[in-house]
Length: 229
Ligand code: SF4
Ligand code: SF4
Ligand code: FES
Picture 1 (spheres, rainbow, N blue to C red):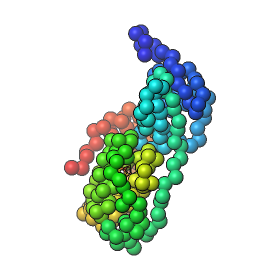
Picture 2 (cartoon, rainbow, N blue to C red):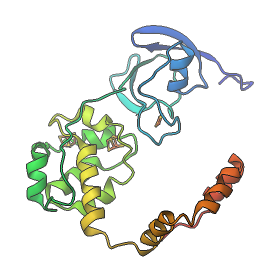
Picture 3 (cartoon, helix red, strand yellow):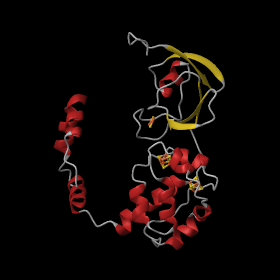
Picture 4 (cartoon, rainbow, N blue to C red):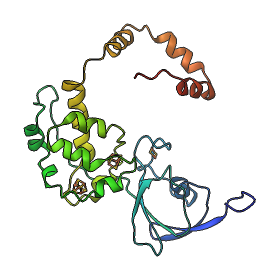
């Protein structure tokens, strides 16, 4: 930004082409400003869906940076590429039929035992998650720890794109969270009650009342909601 708070124009390099863009934009906005209309690699625009993974390097620096394009502001001489799709290894399984043990994960995702503890996945994570830590938990069959550490994963796949062992971290973590929910966490009485209420349509009035609210009222409600301890 300039001294009078007007955006300055900076240079970025997108897919190998040079563009001039205002410096107050996110990388995703800049992509659109430059005339691209992505149909993949874009979703919520607010850091939740994990669709907009991007990688950049500042000219003259060696380090590669991984980030969410909808949350990261452009910088002068940024060389940008998008990761709109990354091929993960995704196994299929029936949650009700698998045995929640280290043997099972060894069978489904044997590559996790090739981890060389380089910590690149943790250093790359856009959400600051201890990714290497949760992979080590999964190796030991500690699904609770893996589920808890990976809870904020938004499946942007940045970690997997850099792993020398070819591990699909978000899929391993998803399996651990499913196992934790299905076999390990205590049953949540209030959730079961809520599901019953949904089944019987008891919540229709509340839902209609929410639909009528303005965005500001919804934000207020969300920010002041009761959070289970
Ligand atoms: S990037 Fe791969 S090999 Fe390196 S610590 Fe993470 S899981 Fe292990
Ligand atoms: S663990 Fe991997 S997939 Fe999940 S948020 Fe971090 S970088 Fe993205
Ligand atoms: S568009 Fe959803 S996280 Fe960026």
